[in-house]
Amino acid sequence: MKETTRPTIYRTMKYWGKKPHNIWGQYIKQYCPKNGIVLDPFVGSGMTHFESIRNKREVITIDLNPISDITIRCLTKRNIDTSKVVNSAQKIIDTILSKDYYRNEYMTSCEFCSKNVTIYNYKINGKSTITYKCNDCNQIITKEIKNYNDSNYTIDKWIPNKRLSEIESINDTFMKKISDDNISSLWSNRNLKILSEMYNLILQEKDEDIKEILVFAFVQSLHLTSKMCVPRDDKSNRPLSTSWGRPAYMLSKKIFEQNPVQAFEKAIFNSTGILKALESSEEYIGKTININAKHYLGDANEILNTIEKKVDLIITDPPYGDLIQYGDLSEVWVSWLERYKEEYKINHKNEIIINKNKDIDFYKNRLKDTFIKLYDILKEEGTFILTFNSNKKSDWESLFYAIKNSKFYVEKIIYQKNRRSSEANVKAKEGIAISDYYLICKKGYWMNENILEFLKDWEIEI
Image (cartoon, rainbow, N blue to C red; front, side, top):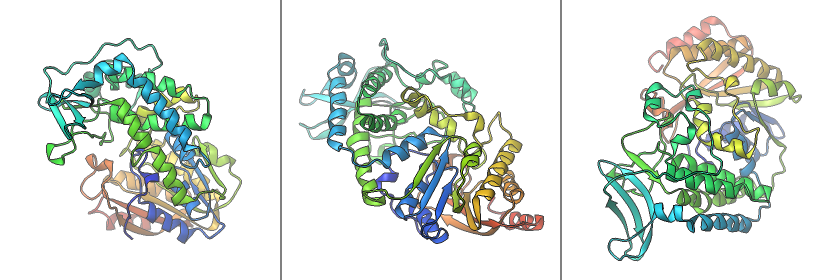
């Protein structure tokens, strides 16, 4: 089965390791009967939630990451007056554009026609430059500046203050490069000033639905305006854009500092912005949502105890050992979201992952505990599908340990090559980043020799 082009509903928010939506949807249709119930205890980007609604299956999803919650909440909103979103967003943008701190940093005159133009970005890429687009000259201009200097504005609005050293996956090398042990140091002073003022205006919005949509858009701009983005190669011919493309906290000698107002504006109005995403959501999963679809924010092991319904299909994408530190990476966004909602704070203690404070025994036993609860919730004839990939044999052994000791067995395994490479490719060997294994599991006993046979067969690939 081949992956198809993602609709905008899946392109509006960055999330590590998104799966092929059409393949996910096909498994839901194939393994969950009509009027059946689908469960995903690690829903991540929300794909199981959306695909179940699209295919008219009742769905229950869980994730302890607030990004999952706000993504699902925003992209299943209906009857939103988008003109109010436009008006509120434009009012915020216009307010910031009128401020001296913005005009001093992101306005200049075109060196050819002398008209006022907006600076799109500051860069260090062998030399210090600014890039702007002049509509009168009809060209994009990169101009060298003498020095790349940050500003020194007084920031009197709220900013996040989480200590970077508390984020477990951040290494000593990164800490030596950063200016302060504070997550706010991920942004330059000039950008932090603009972001803090913009966020303050967003949180003053009185309409709660509009506010949530604006917060969602603001969050999308945070990683793109941080110091962790680098300039693209000249051959890409994309001088106005960048990305935070690696699943790690990083600071490079090459710097790309993006205009925060433009990043927010794109997150509202661009082809992958929230307005197009809301439109895409209605087209893709329906103008009205008549399906019983419930999402829970929190620890799957705790929430599964409260679910009384028996489900037909469990389909999920659990953490792959230590490959991607989802919770840690999400602090770029969640450290700001906590100001919006107090419950939007990640409980890192309960995240099923391997890191410097959680060993492989923690990982496999917490995974097993979750799978045991999934066994109890799944109907006798139901199916448990999970995706997995790793270049570590110990990760596979941990997964099989959890499957076997929760009284599941693997009925078959399907190798799926994906259309696009995952962000995990910087940590995985060739083939891992562009592929997944789909494990189709059923209730029943799995012999040790079966596990050893699987591992032997896959020795080359893992």
